Length: 369
Ligand SMILES: Cc1cc2nc3c(=O)[nH]c(=O)nc-3n(C[C@H](O)[C@H](O)[C@H](O)COP(=O)(O)OP(=O)(O)OC[C@H]3O[C@@H](n4cnc5c(N)ncnc54)[C@H](O)[C@@H]3O)c2cc1C
Image (cartoon, rainbow, N blue to C red; front, side, top):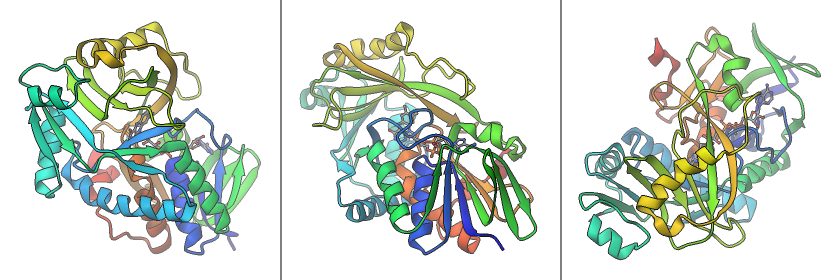
């Protein structure tokens, strides 16, 4: 008989969320992580992540986000510390651009609090920004930031406290569905369980090539500039889409800015150059110089992180083909962190009951044929 109900492979934001939700339901859970807590090789490291409700990517994410906000507050209560800071967010760009159009369509469809202001009003209220006169800003009071590394640590600690077994420094080498159970082959031996959750982030294509979705791993670097006065923001301009998070006490010493999708290059997560080059910095400074000159200060720090991209930018959550006990989740494409607790709940639902009340039809692998 399998010793564990569920084995969670990979303990980033998604794997720790799943382990937490399973353990608190009383399931026998084993979490296996190749590196050690706090490592910076995947997608979940760094101090902060943006959260927002009126979702430019697609309105169908909004119900999941609404649920996630409740789960973030639950997580904070259980962890006994603040992890979500609601500060408001400004989403800025041309009125017919993907960012403004998409945000407004989500906000209107779901009746979310928001305000639209024209460029002159934006520059009066938020003087950090310099934008062309035809730009607009959508201000959403519900946006803000999450303490990323704090979240992963809290989920891991709560999972462990609820009885989950955690093994760090162990690499999953194969996932073998068998009749009635699944065998996880690692560099230390085999583990059998009733079900498995595969949340290995950028290593998904190499661990499960037979999953059949053409995922692409692309590096993005977040850079910290000397403090200035700025809100949480996303700006779409001729330089691409940049996002930023202001300094906050001990949490973050400078303004964090990154370019969404960076240069869109494809890398091997095991072998790529993690140094942030002068060209990488220039990619950010071009947008800062034109649109947020006050943030174009001294570079304080820079860190590379990986996006795992689906071809359409939507998440991927589905069963391994031919296996009803192995669920694969890649809720990334550069925007997954804010959903972590609801993804954890969905993965726990699927491995314990075979279904979830959340609408995840959009995340099916079958959309790629
Ligand atoms: C720079 C950057 C900024 C971002 N900003 C935002 C934002 O503002 N808002 C937002 O919502 N989202 C944001 N995201 C996206 C978000 O961070 C990711 O969607 C999320 O962190 C993905 O988590 P994950 O658990 O799927 O992957 P990961 O964090 O990569 O976790 C996968 C884990 O699996 C482990 N692993 C891999 N292979 C094996 C193996 N064979 N055996 C055992 N363990 C293994 C890895 O070591 C890793 O710990 C950003 C991402 C980046 C890179």
